[in-house]
Amino acid sequence: MQSAANLLMPIPGLIDPVPVPRAVTPREDGRVDLMGLSRPQMKSALEEAGLDEKQAKLRSKQLFHWLYHRGETDFEAMTDLAKPMRLWMAERFVVGRPEVVEAQVSTDGTRKWLLRSDDGQDYEMVFIPDADRGTLCVSSQVGCTLNCRFCHTGTMRLVRNLTPGEIVGQVMLARDALGEWPKGSMASANDDADIEDEDAPQYSPDGRMLTNIVMMGMGEPLYNFDHVRDALKLIMDGDGLSLSKRRITLSTSGVVPMMARAAEEIGVNLAVSLHAVTKEVRDELVPLNKKYGIEELLQACADYPKANNARRITFEYVMIKDKNDSDADARELVRLIRKYKLPAKVNLIPFNPWPGTDYECSTSERIRSFSNIVFEGGISAPVRTPRGRDIMAACGQLKSASEKKSRAELDRLAAEKQAALG
Image (cartoon, rainbow, N blue to C red):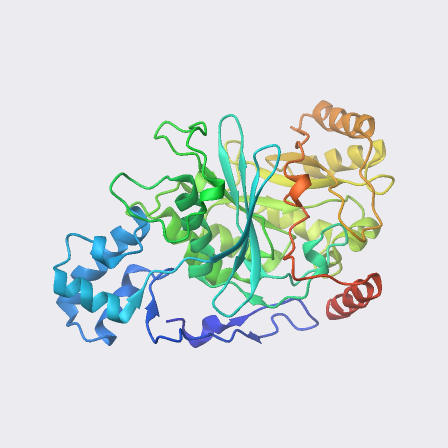
């Protein structure tokens, strides 16, 4: 149901964007997957299947409620549809979920799912429970366009963009597993009994454990803009998943031309993967910096219309030993934020190791010193507690298990991505 324009995705290169086809794999049974479709798209799908306009409008409204508010996957359970209509729907449509290849639980309660699409592509999502919230880390691509040197996902080739259905499907699947649909829902198509926890704490006033979403999984969300936007609109829809935009954060490595559009068309909180305060170091850690430099990036942050003291921009800063963790780096970070008058906070992330990396995590003493300097500069700089390291679910560790490369292969892939950046 995606338009031809949405089958293309921009990736960084000498000319931006470079169109890369996304081959859509039809279902073998010929049915259409409704997951990820908006009300107008559902209406069009129903009309194409033979319903008249009036019937299609009514049924699309009912389907939207069952899919996104109730989490239902079985047409037979949609009780406000007449039985013949339920049978007609089941013959022509399906409500999909990603296939769960593997579900892991960390000793700290973090949960990671390895998922597989209909065309056999693997990607991951992570749920992080805290005392007062539960955050789902959602992927936007299979692999990654970029080559951030500290990030395990960055060692993967970009395979393709995830569709809106595959992005929303991650949220739906997490709610299935956490048992968070309204009573009476029968959404259990991909529940994984091994990760159910009937005694899990409830975090929010309405009893939800999943309270926040971060687009910080595999991929660069702003290089899959249309699909990420469409998926987040479904997640924020008051008649559907109904998650406030204030509880959703989109993270970018610094795709400057798309940032203003993200504010206008999506309007969620912004996080920026900064990780360095000098051109030399950021060029190494985040090669996209060679295309959109620090000063240009920070100016785009200053112009971000949704940013204010109540909705500060978050700068993600991974702490790497002897690379970006000196007191001088901390002072320069304060200077830059003040220079651009940014309503900001800094998340300091201890580097999470992965096989083949050349980097080490800064010492706890060095991280504390860095944090203190930033705090003394009047900017919040909490240190993020590493979560899910034992199951490779921590920040920068996501990578499909099928991706295993030698050091030489990793270096060759890094060189290819670097060349694409010009």
